[in-house]
Image 1 (cartoon, rainbow, N blue to C red):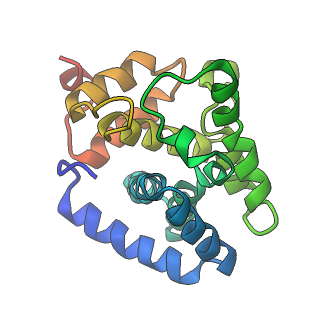
Image 2 (cartoon, rainbow, N blue to C red):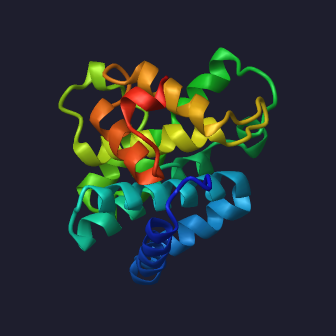
Image 3 (cartoon, helix red, strand yellow):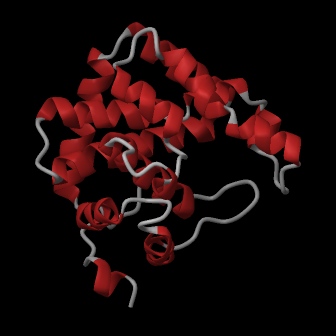
Length: 204
């Protein structure tokens, strides 16, 4: 998680993440353990998204239960990558068309993995966190929120095929796609959560 995140928010969210982990169904513990064994980088990303999604919900003054749901949704959003070969997840070059379809399938694979125990709103996040807002204007707010957290962390994190960008560059990219791919209001919430000036200063 970038250091821009306020310490107080981070402390609160780490506490919340611990509570989520302690109270989560045994299936969550099992799946995240398997994910860590399958690809440690994906689990680290999922934990960062979990913390950020929970902190964003907290920034919105959501009740504790909703903040915990957001955190759990972030933790589980990429669990479907268990169905994707590790070599493909960590491929340093461009994906072929077949490989891209396999990678895209992780969302629905993950939804199938969690639907027996997770609430519907979390199943929706897992299944649809890559869906575009302009193609689905009624996309539920929790899915929109986790999508923003996921996109930010993906941009600032190193991947096998590219180095992560700076937080400022990531913010510019999020605003570039705001209103089309992502919810601009929730990008604003992300910036507030990170302790960064909002839209006008962020893209200057």
